[in-house]
Length: 506
Image (cartoon, rainbow, N blue to C red):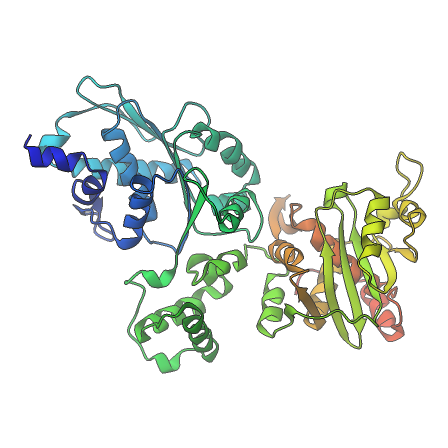
């Protein structure tokens, strides 16, 4: 081996740019791998910045999985005794990464180097290699990575996993990540699940920590317009005016200029995907968290309110009564919305979530806000007697919260959901006080279940359901004619309150 080659092989960046191959999209032909700018940014983050915790949010098809799994091959070849794990949504997805990326990259190496490597195990879930008499290194591919010590852990599509399979997401958090406690962890994903879930907590910490060390989480975001292939021929003048307005706003916000071909491409994707464009091809990182999930119940209406400027910073009208609407649970799962009725407008001015307080502490907290309090609307279980011998309603009233009213139980949760959807166009939400509640409303969704050949959509009970159930109490109180000062509304509401069980979302 020449001195120059030995020097180059000692440089991981040189190796990643020169040694490996990749299957060409469309043809399957193996061609030399030449990293694009986004891929190179991750290579430098690992080898030059020495970052240990990386999370990548991205548009679809930017080659991040390819880059990370070629990095995995390089780790295995040039470090004896390394364990590397690749986690994906399914075993088949993980196996494809192992076979189509890792092994293909190895097979494309220069033959004199490849011949020095002994492949000791080769199947769809593991690949073990060694150079000479060195200890074997192994790459494992699957849905989990609990056990052993990983020097590199690649987690792909954790965003969809956290939204669709919370138990698996928890397994990644509590099992896979600790397996790479002293190694490198790289998470790359399109986003799903809004501002909630295990991965969102990691992303939020990365966004909010200004003094990160290499062992803290570092966030990278790669938008659609960074890919030169995302452009098409066409007449930009035929683009939807709303899309054209959106792109002009993003140009001003980001300080960039989209080409006409990019604008045509984006307009066509937007027409195909609707709101899901934010998940598949985000322009800004904030759009990732706005992307709805399948079965979203209120997300479309929330987006309409944002578009017309009804979700904004605003002042509280101190002359108008403030009514509260509740969902009860453990102290941290109890949610309270604060609502003002001004003319035909429904002003949502505040929300309380995740407060670990006793009834007395909670009432004192409500009083401390200085609002002109009206009535407090509680769900039907507030009138049930718990083991303490007092109802929640009694506990709140004894703590000083007057005018508590219990809403009758409805025969079907969809009655309240449908009525809330009907009322939402009249609502406004005050920022930043309502932001966390809006995140929950946007993420509240259904899951289809089949029983006896009949498929039905049921609201999912997760972190988003407590705030959504609490605001639904507003709709059920309105439907029952319980809201203060609205006889005409009450008549209409009582009629709607008796809708048959077949009622579903509009």
